[in-house]
Image (cartoon, rainbow, N blue to C red; front, side, top):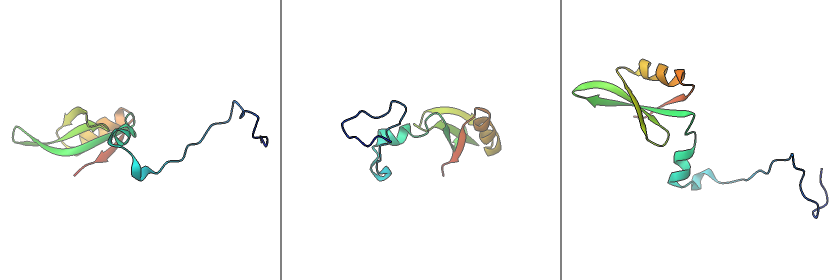
Length: 85
């Protein structure tokens, strides 16, 4: 442990930054889980029920005929599905 404040921190140590998640900006919130999270929400397309799959930032990725297929597609791409009502 480095007890001398005048010495630089160990190169292998990681700095930890604390922040209050309640004060995230819209852009910061959109970036959370961007690569790991996909939102699934019910939609109507040409009069038919379906399920839209969106990235965490809202980018449309796919449409599935039923919820189980949408969830399976998300899981197949190693992402975590989240439902939006």
